[in-house]
Amino acid sequence: MTDPDTPLLPLSGLQKAMIGIAMVAMGAGMSINFVVVAPLARKAGLTEIEVAGILTLSAAVYALLIPAWGRLADKFGRKRVMIFSLTAMGLTNMAFVFALNAALAGLVTGLTAFFTLVFVRIWFGLLSPGLQPAAMAAMTDATTPMTRAGGLGMLGACVSIGSILGPAGATVLAPFGALMPIWGTIVLNLTVAVILALVLPATRKRPKTATRPTPLAVRDPRVFPHLVFLFSYFIGIGIVQQTLSWFIEDRYQFADTAGRSAGEAVVLHTGIAFACFAAGMIVVQFGYVQPRRPDPRKILPLGLAIVAIGYVAADLFFPFWAVALSFLTVGGGAALAVPAANALGSLSVTREEQGAAAALLAAAPPSGFIFGPLIGATLYSFMPQLPLYVSAGLIGSLAIYALLVTSKRPLTPS
Image 1 (cartoon, one colour):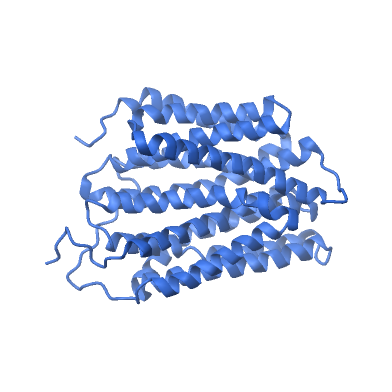
Image 2 (cartoon, helix red, strand yellow):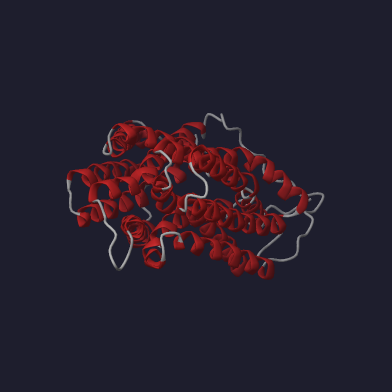
């Protein structure tokens, strides 16, 4: 028998931290495309719908293959799959940069450019989904039932941090070229892969007597409402992330100067907006949520309402500093809403099932980003401001639901 209070395959604090950094690198490698690819692909002659279609198709393949890669991690070992996935993410993003450069240079045009970018980007969706299930499996084996939810929650938080810090990092690299932010995430992915190879222990077989917590069914009535809630939230976030660079480009009409091109200016200003988002998240998360640990039922509707107000303010006030301040507000609201929604989902099940619930809820962001970008691009084709207002309406509706329904539920299952 295996002692439930003893991890099956323990990891040191450094090793767990490196897995967390790998998840940050993954989030950055995925989200940087909304800052860089969206405006540059449009300059290469692709429509908004075509650009969103490229990223949406890749996200769909990625999400659908997560379970299969989880089985491969069980078969070949978590370390090997994590290293492979990070390396594949870096190399497929590199291939995508070369293909996008070819489209910008006019070497491929029209449908040829579109299908070339689709073909290259699909390999990202095919080869890189293994990191998340392998990391979660490694963390599951390295924790006990008492510490599992916290360990898995840390990995989910790292993905969120990476998804914001990646675009925010564009403000540093954009002055060196519009495509340099993607090269930055490529270097990060490959560097972290090398460090994981050195730091993580060699792949070991799990004890034959060990039992892994039974995964929760997607339709489990305790978790399903929280999963749908988070899925809807990330659709709203995806709508804005896909279209923000276009909104900034079309509103401010940047021109080429001696110091930088218009494309670099778009990437820089979009990166600044995301940097403000990240700053808002970090300040509220570590200045309020972590030290105070407020009741998630109370801060969830408040955080969602703040996000909705921030999106509306981004359109109502024209100066760019006002847009940056709006996204600082959005980041603060997200720091309240997302951890609260995840906590309520995990707390809806018994202590022994909280790790499985956390793993299930982690599927919400990539699933939401299957639909959000395409919806956002469609809305943008009708009116540039429409994505902001539709997302605000969706997230505002979630705030009302959280206030009237979620806040009335007990924190723990009866």
